Image (cartoon, rainbow, N blue to C red; front, side):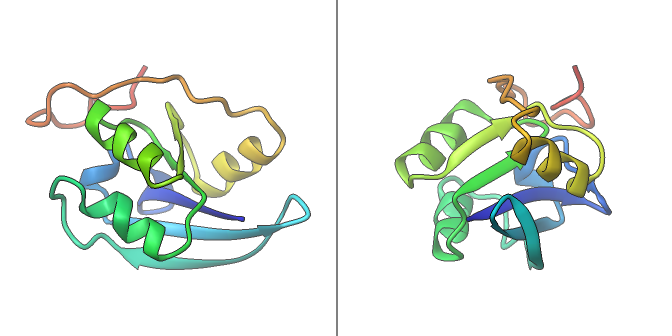
Length: 119
């Protein structure tokens, strides 16, 4: 399984489309075995779901995400988990333990700064 985490530094990004990129964690037997960084190719409608699908992502974790993006991820068979905060590794570990559940939070205003994913 591959889990892509929208990242800013070593933390989960508040909004996936504006992140610096994605840390993709490969997981086997509920343990992280490797991770790879993918630079964000740009925030354009429909690009990121296909980009992460092409990199075999099964799950995407982010602080926040718009409704259309969530729909496009689902159409690309990628599970969406929004509402995550903190370090990327902690978010993945919490997800693997069943402790991180998607809040279903939807970002509505893309001109904002820092409010997506902050609950």
